[in-house]
View 1 (tube, rainbow, N blue to C red):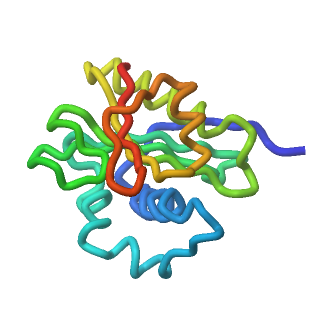
View 2: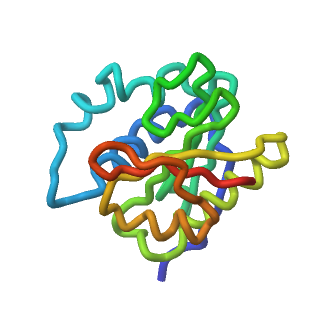
Length: 164
């Protein structure tokens, strides 16, 4: 029987978990493999999502089962303009979320996003954005949680926003 799930705020020491979550979110489609971990997360266009983790505007939550991290949702502001896939404006943080494969389909992703929404709303953040690849089944979860399409990118990828 699985242990009980707890959700805690992310801390500076969670950088490796941030990098894992980012890679896992990017590698969502097993039919479309991506390059190895280090090649992806250290690429300059991807490193903007984790470099200097816990800078102002960074926030996150971690799901743990029996003290082991099984998922993470985090967001980052891009105050210098559109350095990110899901950029909307300098005041809207962009979300990334991932859950370990063996813990998926248990509602953990939704609980993580909801906990992050609550944390950000309490801090005065008004909305959150994300980018989701065309065909990613996570789009259904995002819509259930209140995300709506802000714009469609070339190739069918969506930039979505949710009011907090």
